[in-house]
Image 1 (cartoon, rainbow over the protein chains, first blue to last red):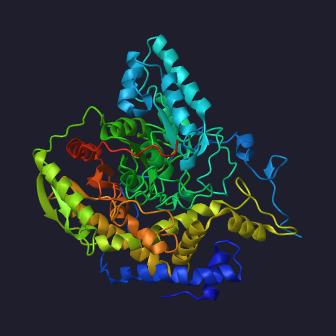
Image 2: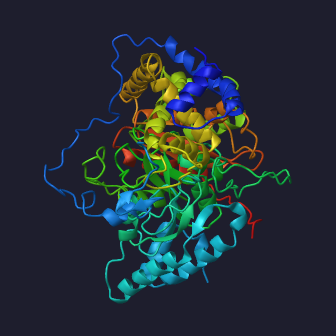
Image 3: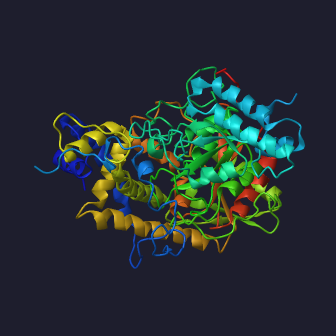
Length: 100
Length: 495
């Protein structure tokens, strides 16, 4: 499979990366070279093989179902959460207007 | 007086505990080396005051007769992928330039708790994506090594942990943290003549480590020898409830368990790693390694890892897929860069921010990842790659019925010059051909120096072990280290 410029533009839009015409043009051969190379995976007989989901067998833990079960990842740290925000406003993340 | 910056982690720890010198003297000696090596560009930010502050605390503890910890008095470099409370953490990206975490990563906190101090934040490939440290927003890292042909070509320190490898090799720090997603500890260690180990997936917490490909990312130590790696890994590892894939197992006493006697051990030599057109000097170092392990008492057996050739293409689907998902968080809303063109709406802000904040290699991988996960292609690419990954893990499982550890080269070549491979992403990816299979299978693997090639550049040997058997890997590494007698170091041309 190979990609054309329209597909690259579509992927860039899905990935939310602004890309002008020249950037899309440049990306077409780069992606095709890499995609052409990974194509060889199609040769592998994977009959009856399940896709890997966990690299080392492990059980997923659940935290206690209470507020602030782990104070480090729990609530009550608004100012820290906002400390690196580009535009904090009134204790919230500020964003451009999204509704008219 | 002993030249403090020539000492290993073990020697610094012993010397500080025994009162031969103070922790502050050690910190100041390394601070001076860091300050004199700006040409190497190994550090994004130096934090000499942090190193001294931690050293003062260790000296005060000693005065009171208290325990100094596993890393007591040892200043280290911290890869700038680990969140450090109050100190800028960038992942070498424009996106996170100026980002100051309000919390400390688990691994770095464990190191400070063990008595280590921070010399600074080390440069790396942007978001850990690269094999030469040429994708950093903060400029290339330069290897302290040079070819002995008299030329002054700047060489790659490897990547992504290129600041770590360059700094340890140049004696700017006795040890540094690294992270390994597809070879990012082992390949830079091999390029610069130092040791580094990626432990079993889940040994070191990923909490507070900027995410690249979460099913592969593992932190580990990079240092001058195997003993130092064992000491530092003990300080870094351990169960962390804040990481959902953290292994809930006690941390073994790897340092105390070090034993270079390989009697009764079987070392597997994977025939698929012997590839057409391989550099004869790499083959020679591999043969040396085989002879050294035999001399240490090991039995050497031929093994087969039949899906080896598919590991790299599988990796270059899985890692970008996970990266495209992980890096979706950089949207200009909550932290990091925001680019808001005049009159732009939210979607335009996302797209402009991400166009500005990510470098070309990061964008390329996000694009590949987005494509292979998109509707209609998921099964053909991503699912197929995860099935191949299962087969690669099975290859190793089957090999363990014949051997205890596997010996292979770390890289297909010695360090290349900066700029040599930047125009061809694929040739850069091929650098990790021997490193990636162990990453895909989550296995512990380390690189130790084997010697110098005819150009005077270091070559590394890789040992891959069974899951949870870091001890077996370290022991084989030690057996090689004792026989390789690697003492070469780069001349300090940058001072």
